[in-house]
Image (cartoon, rainbow, N blue to C red; front, side, top):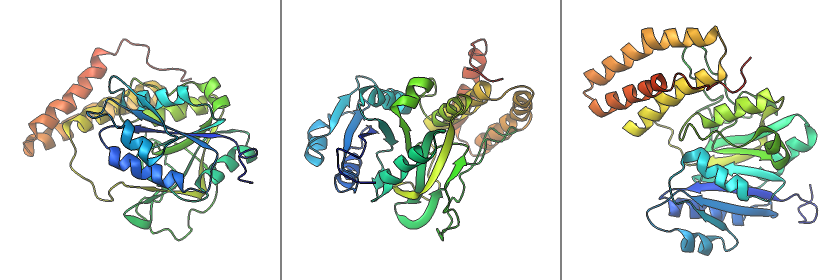
Length: 307
């Protein structure tokens, strides 16, 4: 594809910043030197303690900065950027990613070649372990556990996943869609705040008849640690709450009953015992808080359109 601005479509790049301005500036530097030139860059600041605007403008003078008065979470922050975007294509990326040449070209190519494309994610490598795959697509969510895994995660990239393919879910750290598709599907669900929102969004895309694609030609680096770091009680709360919420919204009977039985008979006793044995009182509180949230909201009509 030609990279002349009058031929290459405008791509709106949206990222969310929250108290990590230096990391966001590193992303902006990688965008400024990227091979795809016809972009608008939108940074949504999710009520950071310090105003990052001056630093962001220094790193990328053309950047559009949107400051939210409150922390609207991952979905809410991205939605602010989507609403402000003017491009035919919208690329949502984590601020702890860095671009490689050909990244955007490969993603746009999928939409040109596959009319059923609703969303596409690139191949992810770990930034600090380049050559090691983080994401080459997603497995489906298990009806028993409500969990899933990334294809190729932590494998050395030897080209074993170098084929364009439809996949179950996009990677929330980098996913492209189009303005036209968004008019049909709508914005990212904000009920989640953190975790599982991109999975739910992808389910909405699929229910509208669109496919989610993994594009091996496009590569992005992610500053995610290959080793599991310490979980915060906040993470425990939202992972617990939203794991249940996702299944309620997107899994039809009888599989939803299977999940709830597994949750009640295995997950809750196991996690409760583990937190007690490790004396992780705050995690135990957060875990049960996530469960209780779903109990309190059980009367809500949470399932959007599951058959």
